[in-house]
Amino acid sequence: MCILKVIPARFFSRQARKPTGFIGRYIMTRMFNKGNAGLNVFLQERMDVKPSDRLLEIGFGPGKLVNDIASTVSEVTIDGLDFSSAMLKQATQVNRRFIKEGRVKLRLGDSKSLPYPDNSFSKIVTSNTIYFWDEPKVYLTEILRVLRPGGQLYIGFRAKEEMDLLELDTGVFTTYSTQDVTELLVNTGFTHSKVHSKEDTMFRSHCASGVKPL
Image: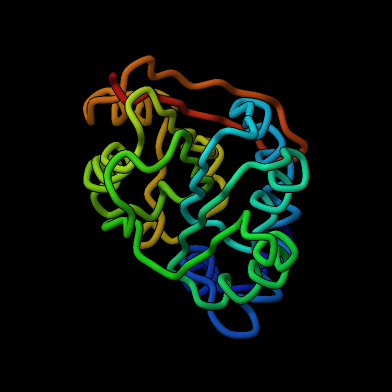
């Protein structure tokens, strides 16, 4: 990630949180797709998505994970929510085939107040977003609300010890250890909360998971 050496930390951090304009749509898309490739593969492995699932991705970014899942699992329906209009445009272009088929629905919105009814989804995934949640328990409570009983949440992230090496703007990023994330899930009401880890080419990938009680 040598580009981090030439882009001011605060500017990059803000773009990572909410990509905007040309840089957001094109430069950040390339960085996200390359930097998150291993994490996305790991998340797919852990989720084990079935055709009968109704899946929500929170913070879909350029839409690569949505596209990979829709391409791999026939008949699955996927909703996506992101608060970046630049990412919505990019992800819509990437997933235009599945949107036309009615299998993917992407929309602009804030995940602090999810625009979905209670008990809507069997699985929810979010990757590299937890750093930007100003009140993590509020976000997780909303996720718990829209999950079906027995539904599963998957959070992809990089751990604090690795993220802190990047010298990101701490006014934008809040980093977490694997234990921090597990405790957040437990304290919000998720059961079977755990973190699985896998070596990646750039960082160690972590997937925290929890289940909504029946």
